[in-house]
Image (cartoon, rainbow, N blue to C red):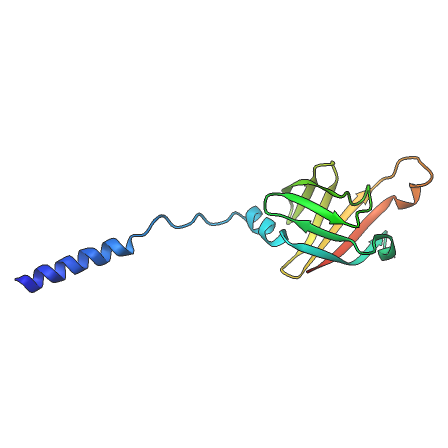
Length: 143
């Protein structure tokens, strides 16, 4: 009888031990994207309307955080401002980074080692900046 009680006690203890806290809430798709985006990215290529303009953005480096802020080393305003916050919004099968300055960046590819970002920019009528109007494509690699 003592053995049965011990076995019963061990069974109850085993069941109680296996009942841990709640399972962690699974990440949403947006949270997964932000987690993957949250790192430092170095510019690999840059083009506007298909023309190579990488030299315009020499040394450009983006850093995103999971708390939805970003910084840009070697910023090139107004295309790349020095820092700000962002929201991530689903757009079809892609995501859009909606920067705090009102600029939208379409993520066309995002994985552990690279991110491709497209954006359109229309310059003011100022003759000095008129040449930067167009459709930009940036490809970054992870640091």
